[in-house]
Image 1 (cartoon, chains in turn brown, orange):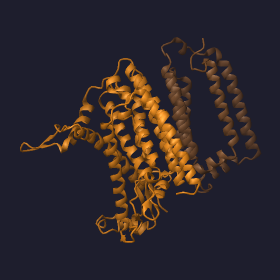
Image 2 (tube, rainbow over the protein chains, first blue to last red; image 1 turned 90 degrees about the horizontal axis):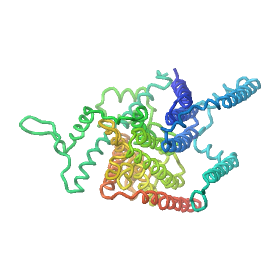
Image 3 (cartoon, rainbow over the protein chains, first blue to last red; image 1 turned 60 degrees about the horizontal axis):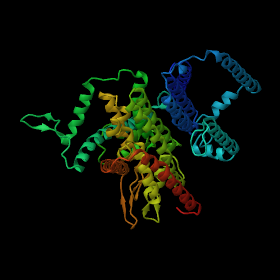
Length: 183
Length: 398
């Protein structure tokens, strides 16, 4: 068996297993670790696809920064409290609706792509083959060029979104300008 | 057509297997040497003798103590056979997982570091002092005359970022260990470790941006190649000469990242016993300590690769020494490779010594001082350094 194919199965199974752990683990920190495993496996997938820059950013941003924050907050939660152990069964229907909607959208899009050109996936897999892929494919240079030219607006727009989120958090916890909590 | 293993050419497979194994063994040996020199060097600094009692008895009343080296062996055996004491209520899975998160990133990150230049086996084994080796010289000369490889496990295009990505996973070890032990001291240690490591990662990354700007490379191979060039015909373009401020910023941030003495708040003995790995005993505790030693070696490797030209020897080209005063000393390919390996190891040894000297000569900071240093001094200074570097590069310097 080809090494890349073998690693594809290893990472694929890890990603799905991590996702399942995220959903079914009782304890929030185990859920977080499931999510971490899933993130790392996705990074491995990107690496197989020769997209090294995206793989590394996946690990730096998601595994290294966001997961650390999530686990940091879970550590500070009072996990003995019943509130965190209660199952949110009442909200299951909403999740179900969203799942069906997203799945439908996904399958519809896939169907559209494949009916328009049935050999899409073979073309994609040929373009990521190291033997035929363009020079420096997936490296840091084309990534940063793309980020600072074609996708600059989206990139900056997302950062404004994050800024809005920070403002929203401050307004939710209702700090005044001296950092004290408003009563 | 060569035969393959898992779709990989068998010669490539065994070459990289050998290189990766050698680097892996090097890291572990260095970890052992560090745990020995930690004792002996601290003893020298404090006017003591240091560990010297553990010894292997020899005939005629002699003892083999190897200047305290046997103490390492005795420690390992002791930690293996002593009781594995665990806390009463703890999260078993996370408790055991934490060791992996502390240990694996330290060993894994070295995968992108070049330990020596290009090796051409067909030419390498032709040196007069290597010709006695059976079979290998004839095999490479006959079958693979053009085969060459780099003494590096993986030449990733994103080298430096890979190190940051893998190093960023290290923090999970401290957090999980502190949280899962179900102990207030451990928890304090875990929290301190997490906030300290996240804070210093930023200034560590910022201090290295200048290096990337100057050399226009982010893979470590390219960085080392760029550093082996000469400025004005005689000065090696090492990072320390072009980015002296970044060197000091990086060394401070890296020691903080390593949680060593001036920054060892997460494991401060006098305040929180031994912090996040307080509840680990026996070999698990030893693994945490060992991971810390391997991290010191890794910091030394980073300093060598980024600021001291990696494996490059001043004025050594692929065919011998070209001294700036015009003389030329021809060397065989094997000699050049061996000189590069020795040069790399010597630099790493020097920085290991320096980092341990730092650890035993500086007192511990207070926690607010640690945070102030990271956010109010190192980060602004690294940004200033970056701005100055950008201006000089834009004006056409370097």
